[in-house]
Length: 468
Image 1 (cartoon, one colour):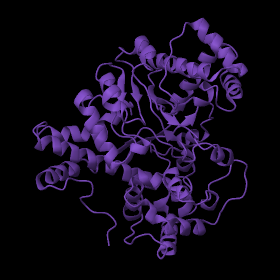
Image 2 (spheres, helix red, strand yellow):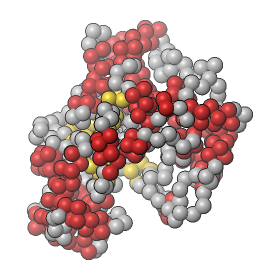
Image 3 (cartoon, one colour):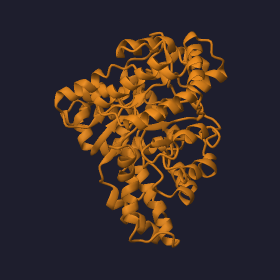
Image 4 (cartoon, helix red, strand yellow):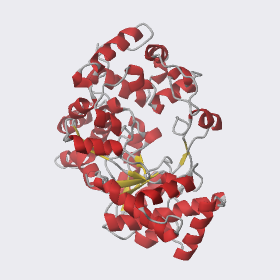
């Protein structure tokens, strides 16, 4: 029994389904450009076997465990590490059985599509996961993971990944990227510069991280000029390991362009831990504009990921730390928030700023008109909670009429779940081909034009937008 329908996500009516299927056949095997994600570079550096099915598929993926937690399953029982190092379940088979017993919770979700795609296409499984098949699944996947063909580098090639970006903090030593480079392996794994820990005064360890950045670069990061120079030096170091982008996960899209003496004074307050919440937000906003100026100097693409109310559960944050499935979308302003940055550098065609959102109401009202006017702006793909068939379709409908296709940045998978990467790209390609088919049958796109657009949506736009 196949887990997946061959025509999943394609239109149900005959002509648009035929058109979508033809387009999909032209893009399904294109290489994967994965320009923004969170896979562990250590996997590619050491090329060690993945430990067990639970550690590969369940424990590291907050898409998976947040659904289980919402139904009362304990994170500890799923093996999610505690912040204090306290005891959690370590028996992979027990974790997997718990996952399998609750697999019905994923019915109808994009996670179910990604998981079933992984089971069928990666591991060759032809039966449903449930309590009865749990042990069979565990043994089958474990046996596959013991084979050389299932090591990270082999799967990288099998998935047809042309290039993948990981994401590291500004103070990371990039040891795993160095190991990858020194190994001589020809897989292209690059880093991305994520400076949140040294630009967000409200993040724990902010001042210590800035001191560390000074030690790493030799600049006096107790001063505003030295702090900015240290960023430049770290960005240059990241570029040595292939970085083509920086990434900024701020609570809002707020930007500022303060006079330099005011920015310096605000920096000193941040270093002393004396910023009010509004001042901390202003400092983050100032740093987005400073990063945009640095991008004009060094060519890094600037990604802005606002609107996530991160670590919403204080209890989960205290027990398990950051990034444990409790980042919740919030309303986000772009038109007013981005104006200082756009007044400073928005008309520069040699700058690329990619905007993401968790607020769908901003697509047609703000993001598409902004990207449809300012040369520096591109709209990132439907992201996170909207990285789904319906979310992708709504995204195309909302932004295309104003921004077109070519002011968007293609698709990225933004995932820690390695085996879901081809599944996520497959979903995006199917949805985009279906959307293009609807434009053809309604007379808004020539059938002869659609293949080129489909190839750009699947491959070309991401490659060009991220300079990969």
